[in-house]
Image 1 (cartoon, rainbow, N blue to C red):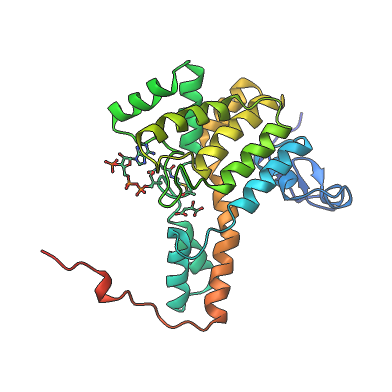
Image 2: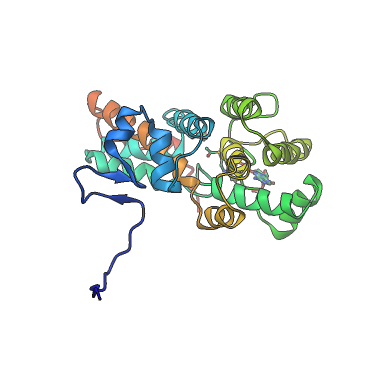
Length: 264
Ligand code: ACO
Ligand code: LMR
């Protein structure tokens, strides 16, 4: 019989050994000739399957909406300071990316985890939020520095509108909205933010598309695929900020003394 040498690496998403590279078994020529978009490529390389058009469109909308949010947010600020320190593109990019985490842009996975757990256990919004408060955990996907109940995040509205039109079910999103209604009754800044909207809607995408088993959904949520959407999207903006600073020949940034409270 055949004797196989043991391998040190297992890989299941792509293969470059043939005449053309394949993503999850789909050759590059099909990807190009059939007019696939970046949402399809993400479906193949992250989820190892072709997803229906409304799903890939949703992924692309997430990428477009999260590509940038101006120069003042944590990630862009770091990137701008790094570019102005004369560092190269990759350094400036990763400096911004490193701010993505539980407070900024990286709350999508935890939002999906907590909303899913609370919804599946049948907790009311009140029970869920109060149980989080008791544990001393801020609700991921809720709250924003500048958005308010009377000044909602347009990105959230656009995602919700798309999903209400195209998704077979938006039960997790509706649950997130119930949570928001309750948190807004406590404070005006506790809106459903873009991380919470993507986290809850991706649960609806996974559950409603009929393309994933229950076990696969649990695995996706447990591993935490969804922050990848923000990382990928925001890289577009951070690269843009790097070029912008270089184009403008901006000097080394030094924070003004007046803006620091020096105290003992
Ligand atoms: N759940 C419960 N209570 C909250 C939450 C929340 N998610 N956010 C704020 N609060 C309450 C708390 O009582 C907080 O007091 P505490 O510091 O004692 O916990 C109070 O509001 C004031 O909070 P601030 O720190 O002043 O709010 P800030 O405007 O700085 O925070 C932030 C904004 C970081 C987004 C916050 O709401 C948060 O941590 N949210 C959860 C994480 C999250 O979803 N981040 C993604 C944001 S969207 C994006 O980055 C693309
Ligand atoms: C973003 O997308 O960067 C924001 O929602 C965060 C912010 O503070 O505006």
